[in-house]
Structures are given as C-alpha cells and as structure tokens.
Amino acid sequence: MAKLKLGALEDDKPKRGTVEFTPPVYRDLLAYAEVLAQQTGIPVPDPMKLVPQMVERFMATDREFSRAKRLLRDPNTLHISRKEPGPAA
Image 1 (cartoon, rainbow, N blue to C red):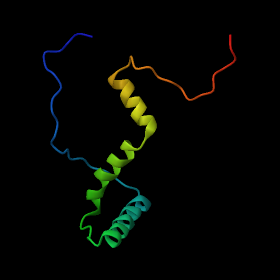
Image 2: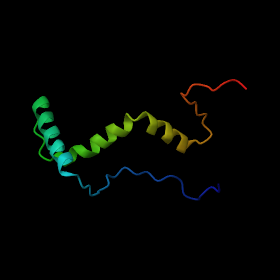
Image 3: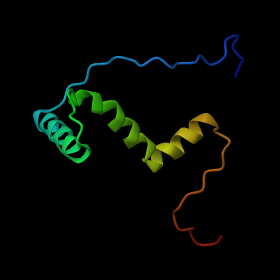
Image 4: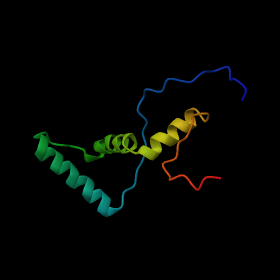
C-alpha cells in the first residue's frame, strides 16, 4: 500500500452520537444507575453518561475483539487457533 503524506491524526476529542435504546434496555440502564448510586453513595444525574464507559469496558474485555483488532493493526501477526489440531497428514 502506498504511504500517504499525512500520518495518523490524534483524536482526543469526545464524539457526540445518538443512541436509541429499546424500552427494556433503557429501564435496565436506569436501574444500573440507581444500583451504582447506592453502591458508591454518589448519585448519577444522567444515566446516559454511563453508556460510553459501558461500551469501553465491554470492548476492553471482549477477547475476540482484541484479537481481531490486533490483526487489523498487523495482519502479519501469527494467529494461533484454539481449535484442536486435525489428524496428522
């Protein structure tokens, strides 16, 4: 691939987006904020502010996503499957 004149841009500004939740998921988000407030003793005035942290945590703990992300960064990385090897040839 040809090298571009621009390098990677630093992106440290938060991005705004709109998310629609199904009613049960939204009710669970409200309940989560309530439980968190009870556990920490700090009220959560806007439960929507929890969403970025939840998504960040979800992605950070998803092993398959971590592997795929590494492969995206460096496709030459050796990928070792956890599947059992087949019969010897």
